[in-house]
Image 1 (cartoon, rainbow, N blue to C red):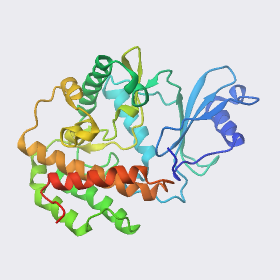
Image 2: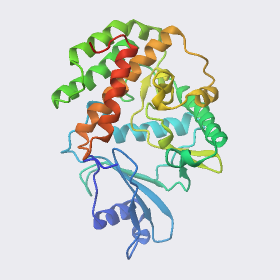
Image 3: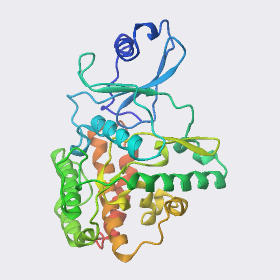
Length: 328
């Protein structure tokens, strides 16, 4: 996926980063030792072969001059913090961080190295797998996502704070940040921004049922899952995590918007039964928030085509309809 947030670097800079992380003896020589992993949407990621033949991945944060959405600020720090939480408090398979550099001495952004995971991306190969194997992977993902959500926080909101004891206030602030981002860049979301705010306010009392902050990934789609021989071997891309309601997790989206896929295998693995009436309202609010992000981020990413926007816009209408608003 092409995006102006991808902070590509020259081979000379990549070699300098490798030397700082692994030492001069492992800096590669010659050609064909670096390739870009192109399926990410935000950070640039390189697959690198070191001089001894070991393969690693380098992730580089966006350049400071590129405007990102409010919730994306400091995303690499969020990922590093989330990886530490998951490594120390769960058994969820996540990458090891070999080296992280926040000095901005070699390039204009933070970066970190991790070992290359020799496995298939479930989002890419899923459609080619036998149905039973794909369902088994999604059941595994449900169980892993539940373990992630077992990590408790002290307050709702960003990992680094400031937190809030109220999930209603924390979530409403998240929605307001997205709407303000859209207004700042004049993004056409197909609705009056004030109307969206009214809809969220009308249903916000459903959020009061959530009283315990839990670690949520929010972006844990099949595209962030690496599989080998029918098993999940690694969960990647943790830069959007926060403390909130586990029901906001990505794979619950299909319970309200079928275009996001059948949630049944994931929910079986998670151990979650049918949603209650209040849970359905909350999940619909989370769908609205997600579709707002997907529409508005297309402007911030500088997408060169309208494919994502054209897909997300009608689904934003669907989310509004689920909350009782339709076009006259």
